[in-house]
Structures are given as structure tokens and as C-alpha cells.
Length: 142
Image (cartoon, rainbow, N blue to C red; front, side, top):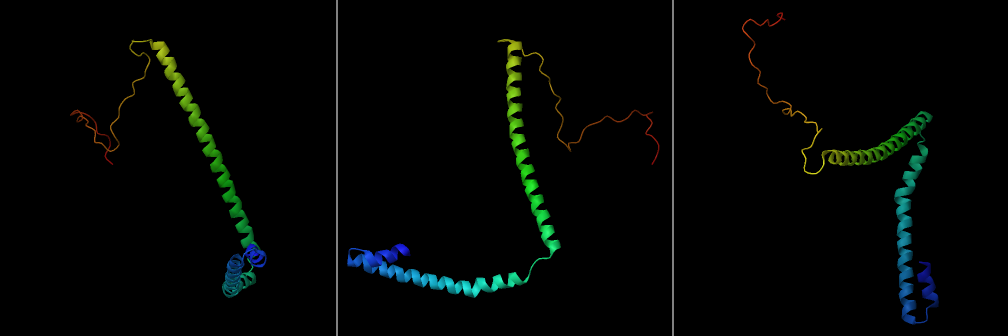
């Protein structure tokens, strides 16, 4: 608004001064609308909130909750950083183990020392068990 006012007063051409004067009038109208909106909406709400001051217990509770949120955020950031570092270490160790195994096995030889892990059926898959022997004790009745 200040720039438009300066142009309206000091511009070298009449059409620049006229355009700037219209712009100053538009800015003045917008400012008046904003001031009226403030008086209609914000001022009453600010006065209402000013009358209702929170109790010391609520202020204390709010401070504790804010401190808890900050602690949790800091802890989460620390754990995220630790996880990232740990993943980097694990991937580096895995690569070193593979290099070591390749060096031990030698080119074109059958890999030695690789553990073969058992394959278990997915959870909930029925397993087949043979029936107990005819003389097998079933245990006490419940």
C-alpha cells in the first residue's frame, strides 16, 4: 500500500498516478473490510477466551502433556536414527560374511558351511500325525 501511495503522489506519468491512486483506494477498502471483520468475529472471541482463564491444575496438566509429547518425539527420533544406523551395520556385516564365504568356497566349488534352515508349513496349516499305537496310554481323563 505504501508503494502504491508513493506512486500515486510521485509518478512521472499521469496514467501511472491514476492507476496507483485506484490501487490505494482498493487497499484502503480491503483494510476497512479486514478491520470490520476483526471487530465482528475476532474481538468477541478474544474477549470470551480472556474471561475463561484455565485453572492451575489444567495448566499443569497441559504442561505435563506437552512435555510428554516432546519426550516421545525425541525418543522416536532417537530410535529412528538408531534403526537407520543399525540397518547400515547389519547390511555391511552381511556383505562381509558373503565375501568371506565366497573366499572360503573358492571359484567353482560347492558352497560349504551354509546352514540349511528347515522349512515349516505356514501357521494354521493342518499337520498329519499318525494315530497312536493301540496300547498307547492317552493319559488321565479330564
